[in-house]
Length: 114
Length: 111
Image (cartoon, rainbow over all chains, first blue to last red):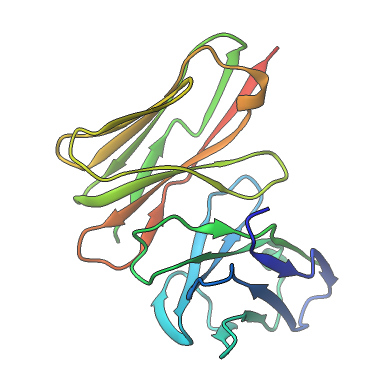
């Protein structure tokens, strides 16, 4: 158990819909990272927040957005869903902002778009 | 863009054989991390290398960081079925404040 929690574990929805994925970082970690992992693919970095502020952006689509709240939990919002958005979405946390320390990954949310 | 390339993408070995995965960057890395993801699981941190030429061992696993800090390798001696999974390297690009993951090497083992 990494100490990072993600909800829900599984999500099945239809094309065109909007979903919200939730992540609670480890106690004391200020950075939250979001990754997308498609079948047999590596980890695609989406976005990073540090202490409530956006820190770094990766290959995140305009239909996707995220935020980190004052209590440090984070939400990833996916809208106008397409079949290709079906993937495993991981949240990770670390204590600092620059990516020089290990990241602790949550169990992931498996999104299926039908 | 800044990339960290990892090879091979897949590796199948007989139990007891050795396994190596390689990670290469076109730019100098501040450090490199290795993660393991078991089938159906999430990535778990294994180790971090920081110094040029650094070598670290964890039981049957040996991690190396190149002298130029642009490449790294993970070597597993005498693989066991518990080693099955995907191994990712992740490099912290000097001057860029983010970790860049390689595409991973999926290791499968024939018992």
